[in-house]
Length: 269
Image (cartoon, rainbow, N blue to C red; front, top):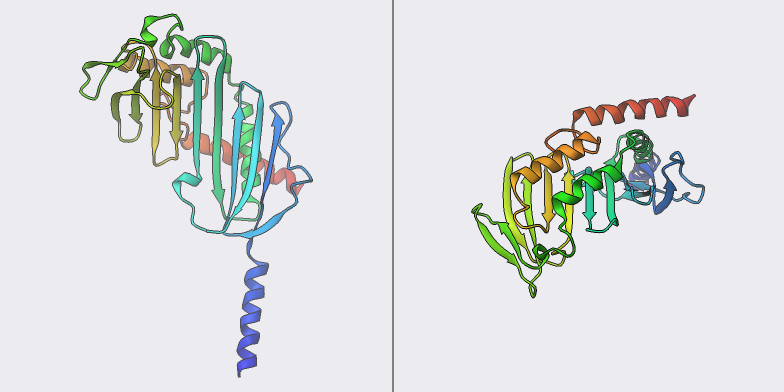
């Protein structure tokens, strides 16, 4: 009887192993915007997994994107596994920093993350986002002239929406307006942390949680008009999907789904 049970267990193990999700893992590489997505031959490591995961980071100021494919042991997919994030750092000079990244996890078929990456990259590059115009229009909203006294004598709106001193020569700071897009909750405060004095936008969207934060270094820059102007700029140039500042919405998912179907049909043919 025992050998028979062992035989059944062995059959079950083989069935599960043969039918386990297969994902490319430990794979990271960089391509320029002009080169279509493809997985290089050196990314040959495949693992049985609970889910496939991909992160695509678009470095607009470098005009290149980085793809990272991995296999996850857990088959649980959380909101943090599927999110989009954009960050702009705007300086008084012509220099700037701008990246946009997409995180995605799936478990519906082998190498599903690779298929998603191909569709998402195609959709993003075809937007032809005018990142230089975005930076140019954001700069006067969030960044003070380096010679301005506002950088060392900064007044901001606080949580009570009244004004208060945020920075002096010996204590640097930046004004912040933070918008929780789904809850429609806006807060105002002074930031004296490690990134104080920098002017930047930080936008995250996981579908169920979304934020649109502005850090600026002009006196009283963390007002509602700054938030509205920044959202208008990003929507005008096609970076956000809605006028409210969302990076994820149903129309964006439909676009990727269409590209995904086209990609799969092309592979089969």
